[in-house]
Every structure is written in C-alpha cells, then in structure tokens.
Amino acid sequence: MLWRGRRQSDNIEDDRSDSGGGGGLGGGGQFRVPIGGRTGGGGSILLVILVVLAGWYFGFDPSQILGGGDGGLLPGGGGQITDNSGSQDNGNAPANDEMKQFVATVLADTEDTWTGIFKSQGLTYENPKLVLFSGQVRSACGFASAAAGPFYCPGDHKVYLDMTFFQQLDQQFGASGEFARAYVVAHEVGHHVQNLTGIMEKFNQMRQGMSEADANQLSVRIELQADCFAGVWAHYTQQKGILEQGDIESALNAAKQIGDDTLQKKMQGYVVPESFNHGTSQQRQTWLARGFKSGKLSDCNTMSGAI
Image (cartoon, rainbow, N blue to C red):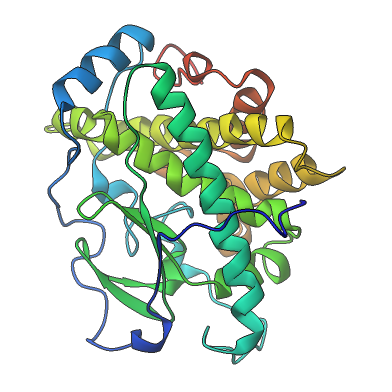
C-alpha cells in the first residue's frame, strides 16, 4: 500500500500513555449506550439513505460491536484470544510512531472517501475520532480491554485501537500485510457510517424481544455490511493508485482469518453456528470483495434475503 507521503488525519487521539487504569471491563457486551447521529438534519439523512438503499435500511445494537462482549472486529468475544507473540511492547515505544502515521493516513483516506460518497447523496459526513490506547481504555461505552480487539463506540463516535492487535493479526491470526491492517480500520469506520445513517438505531429497536439466536443472525448481517463498506472504501482507494499487487488478497485473507467458524475452530476445536455473530470466513470474504468490486453502497444489501 503506497501510503507514505499522503495526508494524515488530525482526528487521532493518542491515549497510550494514559491507558491501563481504572479496573477491568465493565458491563461486557450487555450494556446499552445512547446511539444516533449528532449531525444536523438527521431525519434527512435517514430519508435519503432509505430511498437510496431501500430494502436493507435496518440498524444495529451497539452491544454487538463493543469491546468486551461480541465486540469490535472479532466475533464471539475477542477476549478469549491472547497475544502469544511474546512482545512486551505496550504501545508507547517510538517504534510505533510509523504505525501511528500509517493509521492516521488510512483514516484520512476513509475521511476523503466517505465525505465524497455522502456529498454525492446531498449529505455531510462527520469524521470519527480514532483513539489509540494500550491495554484498556474508557469510552462512552464503558471500559474496554485490548483483548477484545478494535471496536467502535456509537456513544462518542470514536474508533478504538490498541496497535498491538496488528501484531496479533500477523503472528497469531496469520493475516499479514499493511492492507490487512487498513481493512481493520476501514471495517470499524464502516460501523461509524452505519451509526451516522441511523442503521444501528433501527436495529436496536428491531432486536427488542428477539431471541439470542435471532439477534446473532441480525448481527451477522450488520458485520458483513461493515465488511462490504470497507470494500467500497478499498474500491475508491484503488482508483487513486494507492494499492499495490497483493493488497486486496491481504485484506481478504484477514477477513478469512477472523471469520466466526475459523476462530471457533482455532479456539475450541469445533464450531457452533447458532452463536455466530460476525459471519463465516467465506461470508466475510464475499462481502468485502463485493464492495470492492462495485464500489456501490446499494450492493452492500446484507439485509435482503440469504447471506
């Protein structure tokens, strides 16, 4: 990925030196947080997106994507996965400076892409903040542990990332490459897009009274949509001439390695399909590739029919 020398986002909050205090994760994946956009004209956003993406305009409950439960990028409670790399890097070392620049550059590119997409629909995109932390962090959604993986908090419109996850992605999950890391950021930004457009709020209403199995199935559709949105971003990134040979394959491999079925096999030796809440490896690859191929939000209709 040809990222060096490109614009870096100013929407990075580096809290690595402040992370690690305040006790353990509170509430797990069961707590609720306020959701819904903070941008003006929210009703207009909902109306336009409903027209453009009719048939899949649903929402998502934040408890399904927050760190500590069925959280973030990782399915089924990422906290069960530990870092066996042997690294003692707590995220504060100077060696991470370049990685911070990389994350800031990827975030800037998502800002440019989604600003353009929203503008084409007569909307205004609100840039999310990306918080770098080490170990654990307090967000508007409560405390979150780095073990749960990267996550997005609808309550404060922020993406949270402990960059040691990138080491896990490479050494533990077998998903190496810069664009695999870029996919991680783009997926969480995809949840931000869902939040801005009211998708999460709608789902939060829909899942009331649902069984856990049914809520999991709806969660899968939301996570696959975020993968598809990441693919849409990658589509426009390729048009800018930023991608190199093997980049897309790197992202697709990352999607494969963090599928529900693949991770469950790795962690416990067997799979429990009814517990899936992010999608199988094949599903995650399929929807990421679909968004990349077309670059159209309307092709990210995970809510319609079978997935």
